[in-house]
Image (cartoon, rainbow over all chains, first blue to last red; front, side, top):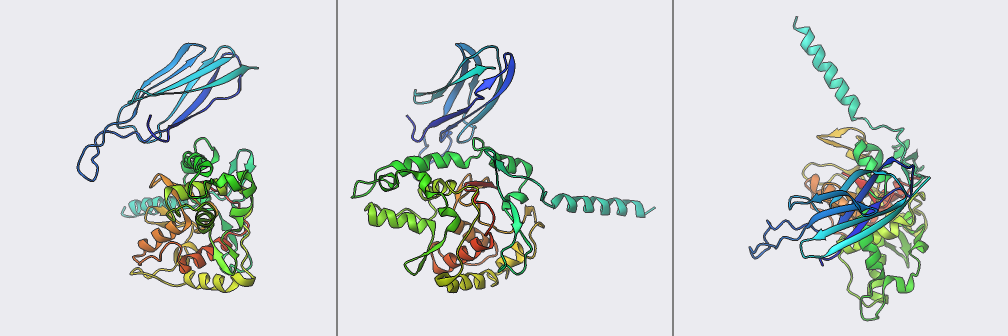
Length: 109
Length: 278
């Protein structure tokens, strides 16, 4: 697991049924591209978040492939329609195999 | 015939100049709390009527970043500050939190720093390092390093919204006078003093940059140009390099005196730590 990784998500606590809400996510991650060299001229191995997914009540909302050119602390913002009360599950997949998870409940009314 | 293009050019220049001015009616509201971004200048600031937070002079997009803690990139570092605050370090086996159980207890501290302690002027960074060396038995942090700014941002956040109220009388008076002298002294090959830009020319453009009054109520501040939190004195160094001067050292008597003086010029503005600037 890469050092200092912390996922954070902002989802409204409440929404109307069928409303489109904005979700903001940010994960602190160094996103080492694999292109840089250290002071000895050796390549610093690539270490990035390569995939991000968000599911709502088990149904996939967004599935993103992230590439090495994406900068430190990737911030992703997207919209989702909420048909019913439930739970958003967010997952970030690290190059080293770790998966960072976060979830948020949302209610209707 | 020849007049028309000239008139158009003049109009274009006029509109550009107009665009450069800050929107002084902009309101900075964070988490429902309205910040004081402009107020009457303290009586001892003879050459200004009103003082303005640097937030006023930033572009709309940069202003918006500070208005939402989720979008404020400074909070990524502030979270590291929380971890550091709770991390045990040094020979005494203590963390910051071992003595300071609630970080909320620091409410109000940022607004009064730097302040006099035992006859000497003390900055926030020196206070943190004093705790680290004398109480924790740990190595001091680098003055403007990532660990230091993360923790000073966390401490500063507790005072967010409170008006800056730095004491300039009593034992602090001679140091404050020294800081004032430095503020009005020209330095470097460009032969500029702080006041030449930040007092005589604020709200105008210096090449592509919109000059502010150089208020430090938002420090440590996240800067888009280097994507990290910046300390007050690191910023002073940057200014001195810009005027082609040899900067004073961080933690030097000169910079500490200047920090006290510049902080006092912002008495009345809200603490905005961690603010977002470009």
